[in-house]
Image (cartoon, rainbow, N blue to C red; front, side, top):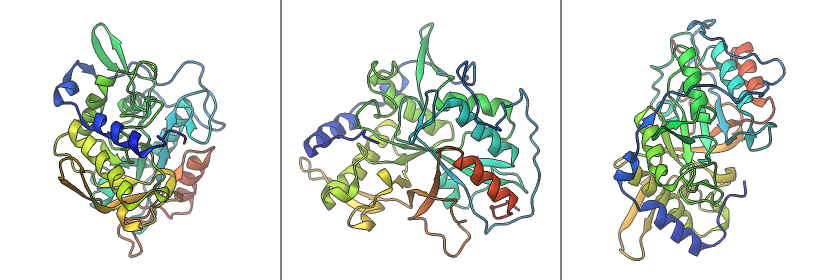
Length: 342
């Protein structure tokens, strides 16, 4: 996606601006976390998909335990528009993906839970699914002001998720948000100007904190979606470390454990994707980072953490392109190759 800055000078200025601020901005206005609707009127579901019922059964077909099976890690970018694209998912199609996962017996977890082999949110006989949102666009998490209070826009990715969870027992707030804190076109903690879907700069930290406080995972995606193979080791480490610092500014003490590679492209010095140190040239303070997981951009369902071949530094994903997600979920279920909790 063409959302990155093009100069190292701009990187430094934007990263510094994103890392400034205080926790007071994160509590600037009250937020209602219950959206009033699911998807925009007139949106259509993909062929063969059905809209969710008002009250879905918490039960689904139970399968035999299979801790060595594959885990689908789904990848979303922009949730908006009337037509799907390479980086865009129509809200109704995103909703249909959630419905398909639910009906097939999948329940959401985070990458962190996957690393910890923590499947406690998934009932026995059902399967984990990880939903990952890349790039921190306003379409994923958008506020609207109503009667002096902030509300989560029910047509944004988070708003649709919350409505879905209300009518689908057992669907919890478990997803991973791989965020940018200094990119162009509003990809700065879900929007940094009213010209980007009405989002205000002072809402950025509040959104990040809300996600952390409500069960979602925060993930590093670099400062401005830098293509890491094009930069020196020093800039690679700055991109990753400054993103972690910005997240810490919004949620002090938060432990970031995962990096999603921009474009799925590795730095020339591959290990820097998960471990390195950036030293601030002004303060001479070192900012080391150690990440436990690295997400690829594609590659299909991920290996189980119980699989001897599981590599947390190369977790594959399924992109939300066409009907790829629905095909993958159905294929895993029909071939009995998915992870099933015992």
